[in-house]
Length: 284
Image 1 (tube, rainbow, N blue to C red):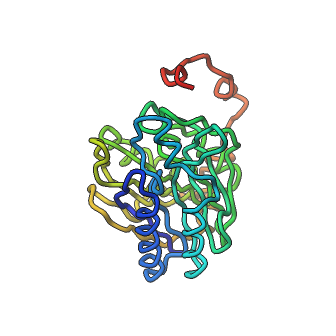
Image 2: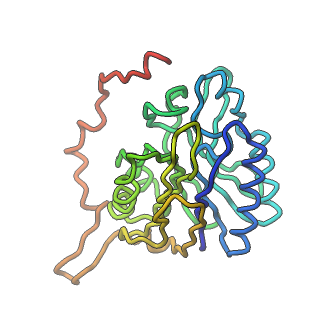
Image 3: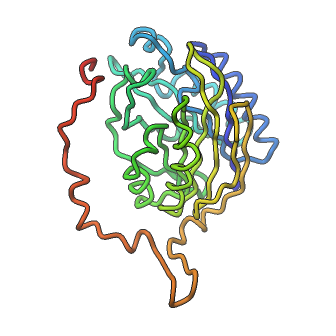
């Protein structure tokens, strides 16, 4: 399967313009042979909102007008996309990623880990379990940006059978190390494909750094951007590689399996609730 990552600029509070741009990109990646195209975080809405009221105006139900429009393009082309946006659910606001195909919205992920940054200061923590979704023989997990800083999320999706984890992001300056090192590490430690797609451009004084990448199951870089210019990354992936967790380097002498070799009985502390209070909790 060939996949694509679209490192593009976004216009805040202009979903129609963003959908038009993504529709053009989908046609381009389809011509390039991609069956799945991954877009940045909040690609429908933009990210640097100054108030909850403003963010609510740019948010949509999921599915909603923007996803209906993108689904029509996916149906025309016979392709799939992972797209970020803001979801309005009654009085709640979620940072979401959605998997869209010819039949519409196939799956939704609500961002679990929220940094004190941009619209994430105004949104609600994701309230649905981490999951994996099947798309044309590919088992796909979705995360969003800051989630990649928490290895537990990727391990859970790996245990659920993920072949590929898609990470739409909005990385600003300061996230360069995450972009260059955390993404191949998440791929390596779980033996999965990991695709991080960042945006570019400047939004209300915040500059986005690009540095998108597609990494393979041994942590190797299959495609990457080294700058903050608009670009489209392509890579061929083979789900069978990510399903072979036992790595034999020297038969009977050097073999590892990062799933079978786990010792979860020693990890109990990871699942105990914590009492830390972040500043944003005062706003919820």
